[in-house]
Image (cartoon, rainbow, N blue to C red; front, top):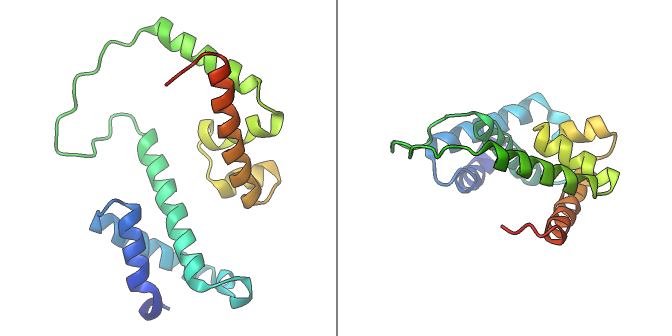
Length: 160
């Protein structure tokens, strides 16, 4: 499997991590490790092995990105960060209220999928397990929920 798919998987991983070779190598290694640990997922009757590898690599890259983006103060470059502006607590409170109001205007299924994926930081698989729906349903609900949220925010006069 490695000989057949590693080059294409590495190229895919490089695109996922914006050319960072070290992270791409780690991503390929973790993807192949998952394949080794879950050989039942590679059953040809369930789809192509390459598709499974690419999807797994993509999901791992997204999970890694979410973990990094949730860490406060992590530095991604060698450049010093710009000094942060003072945070207006009133502005933050208004933003929080606006988002809460917009979420309340969504359907319960759209609201719950956004809360699970964005506010709770769960992966698609984790959200699917908690909501009791297939992962594909979580993906489509998230897509439509974000569209609905944009419309609601536009109706509320929020631009941005």
